[in-house]
Image (tube, rainbow, N blue to C red; front, side, top):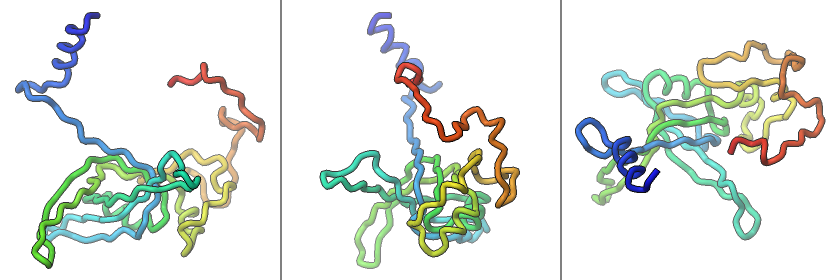
Length: 190
């Protein structure tokens, strides 16, 4: 494939029907809520929830400390009500959405620009029992025995198990029974 052919193919793929270049605005975050969601309703009765999320950086600073980035998020309609009802400060959540900026004039008459994540999908990444057991200390890590046999949790999904029941790991192909799993870099798809 020649370079000019590759470039023309790329141009064909990123142009829409009108010939305009398509642009991408996509955000995917996994982190913990920094405050309880605030649920409000517009004058037309549409639910909107605002919350903050902290996402750890994948590296440490020069002092060996892990830093985090903080983002303000907005979610609308039924998901806003679900977020307000089931998540609270410290809950682990996955956000899929886009960045949106807006401007307003503050009380001092200055223009302020705000950039927020408009969440199109919010996934609940831990069961309610873990969030509830954290109590008033959102920094406390969930006990690992509560995660044994979990198959993931998201909004609107049920784990099929009630709290306190042990999971059947006999059918789990990824259960290692405490043994070390040796995986070479050649086995990884990336």
